[in-house]
Length: 391
Image (cartoon, rainbow, N blue to C red):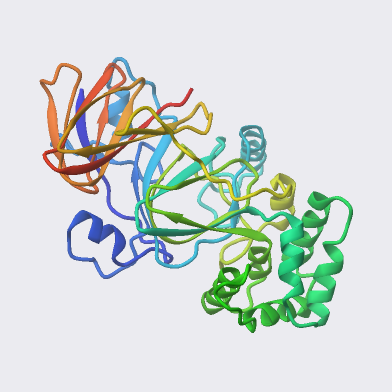
């Protein structure tokens, strides 16, 4: 069975006022539109477009072959300004933290609550806009030391450089992040922010993009200690169709652009700067993975010219991109699947082709768990993302 689903954009302050509206071919609402959730998560369940007004969680519960909950959450994400620097827990950490906060009687919607559910939240995002900017993972320290060497000499930069000079990179980074976010660094954080904000580099310089980004962050969040944390992170620019994967414990922040995001069905976020919201430095430090990494790009495997699979090896989800050019594709699926069109008009039909829907950009449908195939057809160019459970 196939049924269309829809949802209203969430108006987080960092959302774009135009990207989602432009994709959907409608007039902008005039307020930030940050995310559209296509899933059954209780924070914002999609609505089933069958005339009943039911939410997707209620519809799934009535399907004889369906599980009680989707293991994944598919989103359109549109960043008009930087999101907070954040990290997500592992499954074990989420279960432990959720149980601890439940026992403490902290309301699940409390601003200082860290764990709103007991699930992990690995995620991947694929760029839909021509460019998508992100901070993802902690940069290898040799490169960060070269970046610091370009800054003017001041007490804050000297202190930061000294603290990053230990023999164990992960330990040094953990110490610096705790020092910065705890408030112990005091005016030295201001010194570092000022030094990097003043940095003017030729566009061919190794760190020209990082310097430009830090200047923009200072404009959005003047004096925020998270700017120093951002200085330690990989700056990643994705072209349309490129992706990154963010696993448990990895610091990240999306900066600008439109993307299709797929994650485990969770809303657990611990923040590490660039936000007025609650920051629990002690808990963040406990779950943070401070091992330096290269930018965590996720390269899809291609089954043929039309089908690319973004598979991070996570049991909760896998994402397939189907590119059509006046063609038809038969896509095998397993488990409940959500199809989201981001380009063209695409006819989506069920296994026996008796049930079909024509979707325009920004429109989605769910295939019940008993469906084994999706027939996708477009009379012109079309792009469809299909989310399914992973391996």
